[in-house]
Image 1 (cartoon, rainbow, N blue to C red):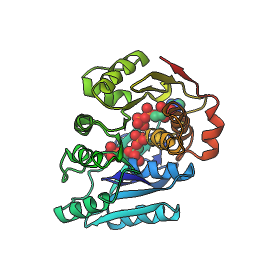
Image 2 (tube, rainbow, N blue to C red):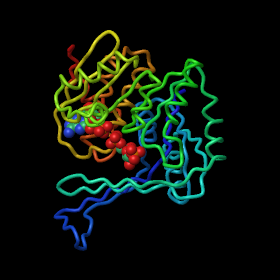
Image 3 (tube, protein in one colour):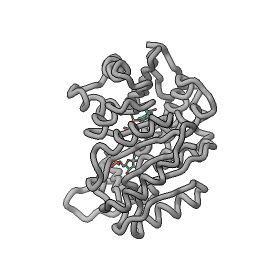
Length: 303
Ligand SMILES: Nc1ncnc2c1ncn2[C@@H]1O[C@H](COP(=O)(O)OP(=O)(O)O)[C@@H](O)[C@H]1O
Ligand SMILES: O=P(O)(O)OC[C@H]1O[C@](O)(COP(=O)(O)O)[C@@H](O)[C@@H]1O
């Protein structure tokens, strides 16, 4: 089973405004709501690619109910711990550029945290746990690291798509795979990373430190995969950027969907990049059809 963990789920509210004027009354041309949060997006992409997963984390209030109902409608198994406050609303403003405002999310108390840990304790050596997204301020900043160290003793595989301090901490626990984007990798090393060569150099440092696989996603420059035995670059297919929200989560989902069928990591990586681009070229998340249509344009080359 794949468990996706979203500690701070969201209702993503996307608003399209042509000719946006700051400080004025603007009216949207189009707006829509979807459940969000990185782990939830991974579960939704996995489902679209034909792979089941279980979504864990914390939800609360009317927004939490919306998130849970939406996922159930998509036949995604959920096992969220309920909290008293409302799950956050993240605003994705689409003008001539993309602007995001992510909320802080509800408080999580010790009893709720304990319930979550019990649910996660069910995972065993056949399972994959995906930790994605920000850590609510009421939880320990080392939560991902602590849980990886504990779970690795049981043989569970861990994937992490996190940033900032959480990424720093997670690295110490040496998960099976991490997927920073080039900004997040740059922040980690206090260096601006813009080239494939730099993504490789700094990603390699992480593999040398003991992480098995590192994928550095680079938006329209594709992605770099570094493993213990090799390094690869994947280009992106041709297409028009429609929406980059969830592109990174789609890469992770696409990777895992292929990996669980027994595909080697380089092949899973190719499927991940195709999935990321399929999402970038769509208004919502990728579909299986789009991912397979774009796949033959994604070439994986050895670095
Ligand atoms: N403008 C784009 N054109 C084509 N593919 C894209 C674009 N932006 C993102 N992608 C795809 O999505 C993947 C993840 O995107 P990225 O923006 O690096 O991740 P994140 O959402 O985590 O910041 C990329 O590796 C690529 O496959
Ligand atoms: O937990 P964070 O870092 O605030 O991120 C949450 C946001 O990330 C997303 O999961 C999108 O992530 P990516 O664009 O990196 O794939 C949104 O759905 C959500 O609003």
